[in-house]
Image (tube, rainbow, N blue to C red):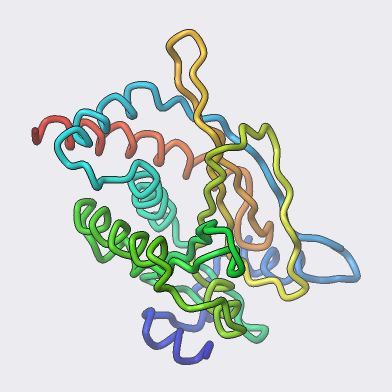
Amino acid sequence: MERKFIEIRDGYLLKDSDKSSYEKWSLSFFHDKEIISDPMLEMTIHLDITSILQNFRQYQSRSFDASFNAFLIWCLVKSASNQKEFRYRKIEGNWFLFEHLPVYIPIAIGGDARFGNMNLQPPTKMSLKQFLSHYREELNTILEGKSRPFEVEDSKLWGLSWFVGNLPNIDFSSLSLHKSNIPSGRPLFYFGKRKEVEGKVTIPMFISFDHSNLDPLLVSQFVSDFEDRLSMESKKLRLEL
């Protein structure tokens, strides 16, 4: 499964010559169980999406199937992909760098299945409008009860994919996730409930990341790029009307 994933997603083994002097130390140090019991760090950031949401709603008024969550995900993956360290994955003890990674999203559907599996093609290979359409098609399939049940192989897939969850009914100020016994270097993201206070709309964004390949400096650079991209892309959508 992993080897096939590597080939399909344009992954290649990181050689020592590909690593920075810092990475030659950090990629092994933070995964040394005798020194570090848990390499994962977590933070929650509250994003101001006031003007971004206004712009998107103007576009949404004429493109009814467009999802704001899909818009957030496309911008998130595009910004994260700009930093190669976000695309590092550890497989069978070796570090790989991927060019194009798919997105895995758990969709709450209730009932016996509880969750549907949304596996999306790499956003880096699609325009924003293509991704919005792709997201809507996959979501409709799940909501119509046509998605297959969660299987063991899915855990291997989402262990390497971008993981972006959505908790639209929970206004969290912090969040904590399960820690895998097999570190992969894959960051995890969750968006929460939008909240409006005195005309200002915010949304919490949770990030869990592996300190071996990511750190607060890289995350802060990603957040800055993400905020700029949200603003820029929402304006483009509004101006296209």
